[in-house]
Length: 266
Image 1 (spheres, rainbow, N blue to C red):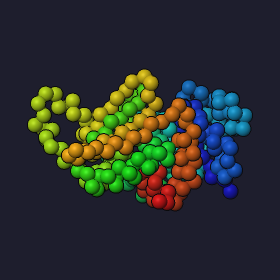
Image 2: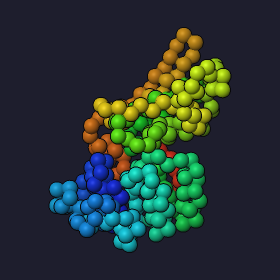
Image 3: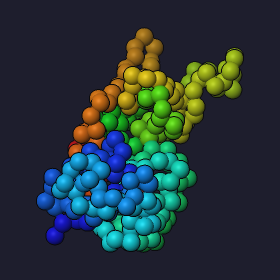
C-alpha cells in the first residue's frame, strides 16, 4: 500500500521537483500540498503535471485534515517549526528540508515527536555529495584540530548560515570543538570578521548572485591544508532523490534524527 504524503512548499524550486518525483513512483502517493499563493487549485494544474491530483491548501493545518503518513516540510524558516509540530500532533512522521531551524527548535521538536511516537528526519541538504562531505569532514576533525566553514548561497537566501552549513557545524561538534590559535576575544578589530560561532565552529556566509548552494570546510595544520567542498548545480533533482529515500525511511525512526546518513548504510 502506498505511503500517503503531504508536501508543504510543493510549488517551490525543490518542492515542485519532489512533487513530480513522487508522482513517478508506485509506492508513494501525494494526497495534499501546501502553497499559500496557489491555494484552492489542483497541484497538477500549477506544475503542468496532470498526474498530480493533490489539492493545494493555504496552510499546513488545512492540508493535514487529509490523513497522511508522512509530512514533508519544504517552506520557510518562519513557518517550519509550527508546521512540523502540527504534523506530529496529527500523527504523521516528518521529513524536514527547510533550513534555518535552531538546536533549540530541534530539541523541542524531538520531545513532541517522542510523545507522539513519531520520527523526524531533518536534512539540511538531501544531496548525496553533502552526506559524503559531512562524513569526510567528521573523519578529518578527529585528526585535525582547526577548521572553519564557508557557506555559499544565492543572494536572496534569507537564512544564514544555510541548513547545510548548520548541519555540518553540528556534526563537527559531535567530534570536538576546534582549537583556534588566537581566541576570538583576543581578535584585534571587529570580531564579526571572524564569522559567526555555530556549535563552536566559525562559519562565514556568502550571499551573492551566481551561487546556488555550496559548503566548504577548510582544515589547517602547520604547512598543510585540507579543503572539502560541495557545490550544487542548477537542478533540484539531487534533492528529490534524497528526499524520496527520507520519505520511505522516516517511519522507521523515533524522535529527531539529523542527516540523510541516518537512514543510509556506509
